[in-house]
Image 1 (cartoon, helix red, strand yellow):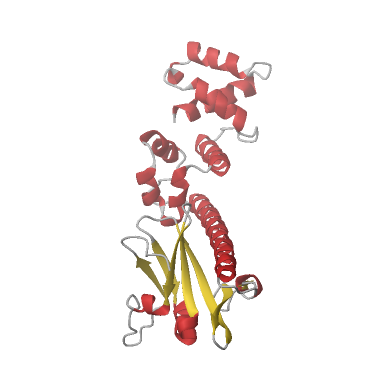
Image 2: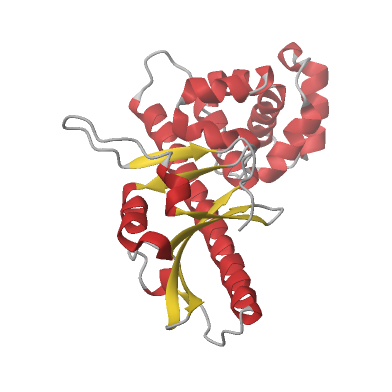
Length: 268
């Protein structure tokens, strides 16, 4: 918070003394204004250099709020992931100085004003979108790993047919990769849904649609579960999944489940 107090003072001083530098303003405020005795002017000068001139701190609360918006969007600190879960969840992840800065910006009012609600909602939406982008990128990485794995597996079986990246053409097919297994009667489809996890212990989310595909395609359906970044692979059949599937009861119908594994399942 002391850096924001400093930049607020610097901007006010520089409005009145436009020919002064930020360093001169800091020196003058230190020596002439007891209110700035504990202010972090080194941090304040860094903030002054980062924040647009339009943030004038005439309204200190609004200035701090706008400054926080700029810094959060630029640096994306680790605690940003808590924005979608509400401000109390975020507060736990903040340092005392960070929390005090948020409070000084009016962001923890007991009954927040509409602009404050809009501020929280805007950042929550942004962090959800960034999370979705990360998950999409992680999912594509897993699909590429599975394509490479299947090419090598087919080559080792003497199959010249190439696996197909089904998810690129039809994301509603219920599986991501179409590969093959040789049989005495020719090639049989192997339909692969790709999952990725960075969790330890590993976990995966299975949708009702994916389970319906597993039931529909029977022993042709498999899950590839990749642990990233180590690129460990587990290959799971529908039968491997069955013990984790809940029953529908009454008028309830499950739509998605989380399956946790104590250790990474053994590879195929």
